[in-house]
Amino acid sequence: MILPANNKSIIQAPTNREGRKKLSKKVILDLIFRRGEISLTNISRTTKIRPGTVNVLVQELTQEKLIRKKGEGRSKGGRKPTLIEIDPTTHFTVGLIAEEKRMSGGIVNLTGAILHRRELSNQDFSTERDYIAAIADMAKELIGTLEDRESVLGVGIGIPGLVDREQGVGVYCNYYDWWRTVPVKSLLEEKLEISCCVENDTRAFTIGEKWFGLGQEIDNFLYVSLGDTIGMGIVIDGQVYRGTGGSAGELGHTVIDRHGPLCKCGNVGCVEAMASGLYLQEAAEKLRLKGVYSAIYEKLSPEEPVSIARIMDALALGDKVANKLIIDAGTSIGIAVSNMVNIFNPRLIILSGYLMDIESPLIETIRNSIRTHCLSKPASEVEVLPSERGIDSGILGASTLITAELFR
Ligand SMILES: [Zn+2]
Image (cartoon, rainbow, N blue to C red):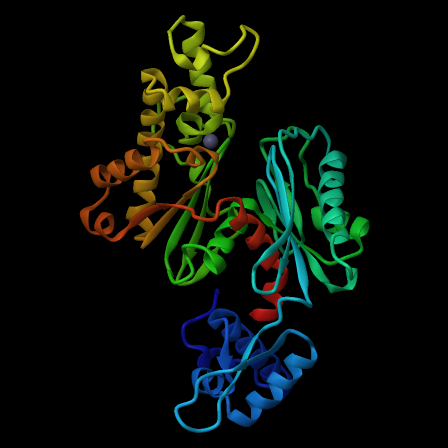
């Protein structure tokens, strides 16, 4: 949960009574969420809110069907304490990740369980209208799985590229040449008649890792996605960092070789142009044209392009060409990530994206690169781990764009 460690200080922030009450309710709800179950006495003890006030606020939260009684806890002699938990049956959100080629969504309850899922893969949206229609259709289908539409609080969506979160606008996305300023939030709210919230996709995954994944107990970490593109989410002191204009985390466009190849962004030597999934496919294609022999090409007809699946299959067979491609990419990514480790001194780097889906020497190469290129202190303090939740981090992170209003 993205909250300062010391709850007391934020309860004191608003000066009017109504504001204080609202914030106290959020703090209580957040605590119940994090603990799973807790007694009234422990709520009061932990939040420093007076027991009488806790009683009243818990009653209100129960009436709003956000929490419920779970039963009785253990007693040390006196009356058994009543335990409270988040009600997982009354309020839901839709969390949806609309990446360049894949769309994944789910119905999420208030405890972060994904109840129903939908997936669209290998899509290439040729217009803004197609893209928005596909998101709306998936959200409608998911909402349709619930008995009561009114139980849906809203739809959170992670989209690629630069996002103006306040306005709910996708400002720029270099993957689609048709993408100008796309008012995703207003277009979807018109179609769905429900509150929508938009965030950059990598950042949605990062929020998912903070709330539900490996980042839960960690205040400083980086989330690195390795797919067609290379992106990064940044968490500093428990907060997601967005930067002045919301474009923070463009790891893919950090230059690691000033004589390197041309990147889609117009620059040369960006790590994305030297190590992304798209780069690997292009590099394998070039070797094929040169007549290099590899298991990558064995099952391909002459017209069929090289896919990541073919490279990974060849890798599993011990193919030397595939192995070199992955090691070279890992070394390049490792250099870029090492720079980030020197700058941010994170405790953890979470790696995700389809390049991490299959067992490969990639993660070990990145770890080696950090050991080689980083200053020894930050290198010794950082752990590099694959995400345990994969696409679910994105779905959950997108859903919290809506529920964060309740909890924070
Ligand atoms: Zn670039």
